[in-house]
Image (cartoon, rainbow, N blue to C red; front, side, top):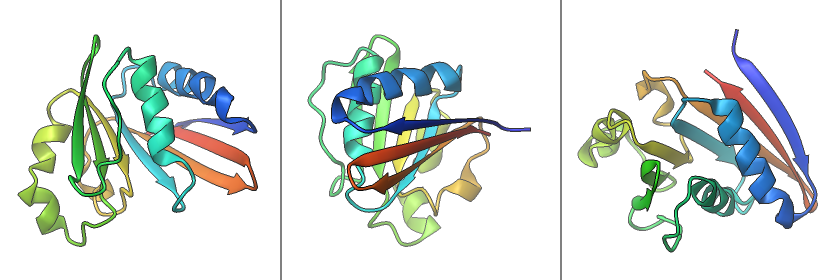
Amino acid sequence: MPEELSIICSELNQLPVVAEKLLAFAGDCKVFLLNAQMGAGKTTFIKHLCKQLGSTDDFSSPSFSIVNEYHSPKGKIYHFDLYRIKTTEELFDIGVEDYLDSGAFCFIEWPALIEDLINVQHSRVNITCEGQVRHFHFRNL
C-alpha cells in the first residue's frame, strides 16, 4: 500500500518546511513527479527542495532547456520541465532513461508522458491551489 501525506501551505515562507517534510517522507526515494496547474508553483517548490538538499546553485525553470542540472552535497539534481515534450520518442531523444537510472535526484514537472517509463521508487507530488493556499499531497510509489 503506498504511503501518503498531505500538507496545507498558506504562506510562501512555509515552502522550506514543506520541502523538508517531503524529503523526510520520501526517505531514499530520489525521483519526484510534480503535477499541478500552470502557475501553481512547481518550479518554486523545486527550488526549495534543492535548497533543502544543500544546493546553492542558481535555480531557473528548464522550460526551454528541458532539463537543468544542479549540484548539492547529496549529489546531482536534475530538474525537468516536460511541458513541451509531446511524445515518448522525444523523452528517449533527451536520454531520460539515463537520468532516471543515474541514482541522482530527479524533479519532474509535467510528468504525464514519463510515468509509464519509471521503474524505480518514486514520489508523486500533487499541488492544488485555492487562492493563495496550496495543498500538497505526497504519495510514495
